[in-house]
Image (cartoon, rainbow over all chains, first blue to last red; front, side):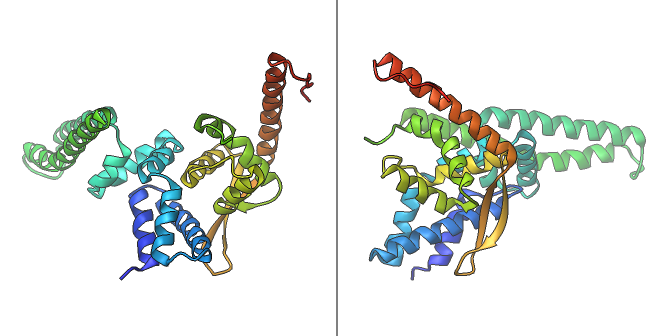
Length: 165
Length: 114
């Protein structure tokens, strides 16, 4: 059964899957959709029809997300990427990063972990055997690295599909 | 005749600032006001407005605050700042100059930019 509130919430969350201002953006978009649905219902459409009209009138959710990203400052976008990485949110990373930016992040993450390996081995803190730090950092590094590689592959595929279309 | 996508994008900032000059407003109301004032020739994809508002907020031309709709929903209002008023004045000047240039090139009556 169609539930307007849930549909609007799901749509808004899909447009803004992550980000520092995510909740504020979602609330703002949800208010807009409710207003538009009320208008169409006033013209005699059912709740479901009115919702689809309102979403159509908004434009493509991908364009909306892209425009929203362009409006963000670089540090804000990088912070969003970092949060998405820490929460292993691949969907958000797909929206946030272009293939080129993903490559930069892969290099950045790898350099960060290499730096941490060197630093902790050099300081000789915690483990008795310094190489244990290396094993630990390698084990952790593997997670964001794989995630970013998947995002890069997906992004390249999406770019090719867009070009073909 | 409906305005082209490029023209709509270029004119969006002064239009939004002009609406906010009339008083605080929120996204949906801004779109409705523009649609009404243009007689439907400015047919925006509604979603286009929000990134513009966020960009204006980032430039500190507008500020936002949260209020409530009549039905109790959270609603984000935008308010024009002093720097926004100045930006609007500059943009209005630019558009007047462009209009005057178009008039001159098309042999219309000469319009003196204000």
